[in-house]
Image (tube, protein in one colour):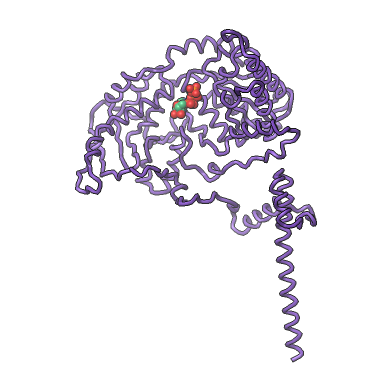
Length: 514
Ligand code: ATP
């Protein structure tokens, strides 16, 4: 009897000790979170936590230099030892009504309730011989201009490999869809929203400046634009120089000291639609720096004096979030030559330009990892003082013949599937590339889109007459896009920048940087 009373007492004490330990663990967790919030500058959240716990988190402090990051690191090591791989710590929560799988393979659901199911649409049989079509090596995954463009899929639709290879192939091929709009499926880290340091930690700022900081912060890319270097066709020199200027100094800082100290500014110039913005997006995707996508509308304010302050805040924010890249698109619209505008220049605009120059000088003198990437279609309009500060200037030229060929075969591969609709092409890529001399990358995209649209346009009547629920509809045949079709589209679409090219090369000769 005595014995069982003793054992009950011991069990009771053990249970109590367990409860105390669990309570302590919960409290420790809150204190670790509180310390983490303070360290990261999330002051408002820290104060709220303190209030909710009636000051409980402030009455304790953590021992042994432990912090949340260390706890996570320990967990990762434990997981690695146990499973030979690192754990996936977080993933995006599904939005209400969102199907996680649909999102993970990049299937975009239409919000349009009027979407009709399509009847079976089949491509017309491929002619055995015909328009003298020569194909680029279809099995090659890397074309001659170094761009990994799979030959049998296209932006204009899903992809053939999903039919052939199943979901694994589909996942691999979905990367293609990211080329221009960046909305395709990527790895989870591509979808991860960037967590910025809170503005409350942005010290020495008045209320007004903090408001301006909030305006500029809207131009920070929180999502990766998902453009990889290999998505950009051609432009090998430009890619190499951009990597040298932005990527390597962050990756290998020990190499970039003294005379090798990194460039602070780089100008991409050239005809419209040649891939300047695409290069900037590749920097944002590949570099993992804080990327400020700034256009004239971000820093030109109608309030006198605000533009100047916005520029200052932009550079201060870039330093705060360093390493950062500031991308100034259409630079000529904010940095045209001073005092050249008709009727004299507005005082506010002159002060804004001066501030931009001063800030660029500040960068050149500092060790901060902040880099300015600018793009312009009209480099001859740029202020000379600004040009001097953009140490590296790169002409992003019209695509070469191999690049044009790769672009056409990228957009219009021999077999191309759009949301279950297969589109076949019989194209002599080499001839078409020759015919498209002087066309920019975006011109080529438009022509390919128009060529792909032709056979689809022809079936609209049949589709329109198809009643909902009418299952007896015969399969509709989609015509093959031929070289002749393509040439016809070409005859109606003129290159947008061919005549400007001489001016760019003349400017390049005059202002070439090494
Ligand atoms: P602008 O000066 O008018 O802003 P840009 O030089 O910045 O033009 P982008 O916006 O980068 O041109 O390119 C426009 C579109 O053209 C891209 O979305 C892409 O579809 C296509 N494109 C242009 N160049 C390339 C390229 N080198 N590789 C792949 N696609 C390209």
